[in-house]
Image 1 (cartoon, rainbow, N blue to C red):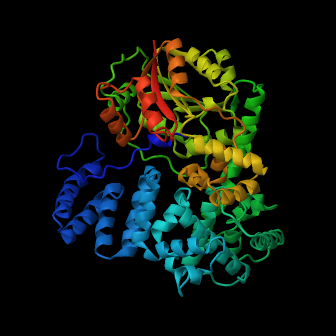
Image 2: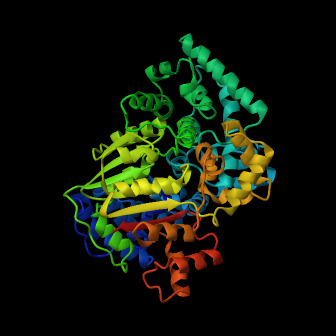
Image 3: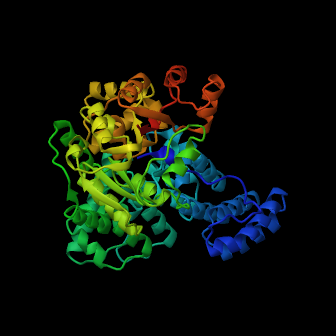
Length: 586
């Protein structure tokens, strides 16, 4: 998964001109938004608020308008309304979740008790606090109606340690309440809704939150009670399946299908869809996925098994759709100073996504580029089933999925205009052999995007893997949960800076992978020169590109790999997000 490709919404206000290609509602709202932005910049917040609301009545899907209105509401102390508007902006632009520290900071501004709870939870850890000790006398009611917090729980993995610890304590409190709930008793709406949101989060993060033995025993007992009630067609409190779903996927119940036949409150029905209906759909999908090549290599078999057990990663929403652009236009925008030739291609650009995982990156490529057809392969049928379900839900028909081993692709008799191999080659038995095979499928003049682990940037991961080996941890979910807590109490606690640290499947990929190679810039440079590849450039945040330009002003196009080697040596975290770069074949 290439997180660096996410593009945040522009932070500037709307300009006066109406951009070409807008939908009719967006075009109609644009002048109103421009006027609202001017009033906001002048500090005339009441007028700006009125105009933003008018614009949203015309075009409800404008994420920037929701965000700007939320900022006004926050500034004027209308915190609940601000939370709802920020939540809607995030739902419309899921790529903003890549700015997670900023989102958590905004959440704390919208709901200050959450920030106070984070500090209390950190001071008490590993002891879990009651909801009242965390949040005050009102307990969970302080946060149960917070729209922004629910959005974070339902739409993306929680990637903040302080917030994770708060939620871990709250989960235990909700479990106690559910255990004591009467089957026929009334459940307060916001309470159930929050419990369901937390259950959805736990499924997204593969149940990575830690739990004490007595807490887990209580969850298992509630699960058994729920199973008995379902099989006997007895009365079931909605809190029971909601609470069980915070600890175990509902699909693991022996009669899970019975959950789909009952009429539940909407938030709980959404949990049943996530944990029962959708996994069943993915499983059924696997039978019809094309098996393109055999998987014979021993390492490939081990990697496949890992991703069958832990499809990587779970995700909810792809980046928001923008007007698609031609591939060549995209590259010229990304690398405006680099000279390269546009290859001769047909009317449809054929793209191979090698190692597509659960499909988010492939889907975003298919949305970003116009006139493209994607052929996306992966070793794992579980991952491919997930990808196909998400693709179908988005009503996309320009992606074809297949199970295949990159090391066997030279026998398929196909070629491509563009090949995307982001984060897959370093998991092969021989990365360079896999790279050569992919090159054999790339047409002359074609482009390739590669992502590889940096040996220098992953030095902390290497040290942590040594620690894990020395302590004898396995790659089971229980071991990963225990290991995370032990790492946080060790010199390796800086691993929490990696977003992959915050879910079981991603943490397994980060620290427990069955096969990992790390490379250096000289190794990459040698391969490029030996295989007729033109280096187009690294994809990096602007701050890093500016720092490089300041150090090497003579390298205007920023393609001198010797200079990049010097730069990385001085700034060893430059490629913490992998070496991500584009090349063109002669």
